[in-house]
Length: 153
Image 1 (cartoon, rainbow, N blue to C red):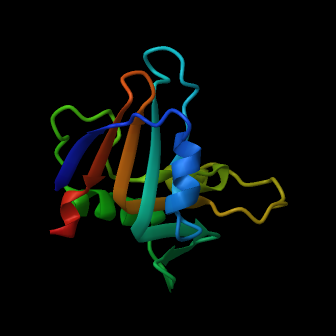
Image 2 (cartoon, rainbow, N blue to C red):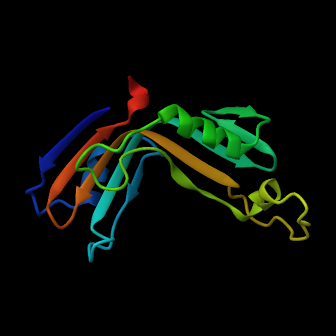
Image 3 (cartoon, rainbow, N blue to C red):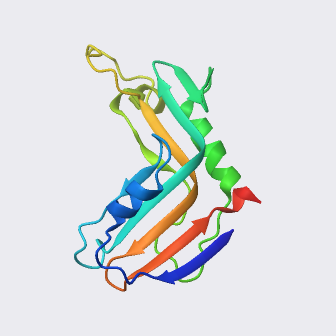
């Protein structure tokens, strides 16, 4: 894992500005904080995903290839692959997965639940991105943390 801590002196540029400069694809992510208090001090940019796991109606799409696999198993497999150790001095998030689990995955977790609701949206049941690069911004100390997770080596 490559890690670097830099000073972030340019107060004219926000993490959102840097995101606009750095983003290259639709699966790049900006997690912007409220910039107040202990828990809201960090913003993150996640770039160039090595893996994207999406699922809908029993099918899982991994890097553009549909597979009949439990999406929770696919996500777990990708997290185990990354096998990351937190770099010293880094904020809480330094790599791994960013995404969501939707309501319609409830039957994978609890198969006995009945599904009576009509599916009226076209959202993915789950959508997870595993970025190659993570940039963390400490909005209080004005530091920038750059991490390339260990699965790159």
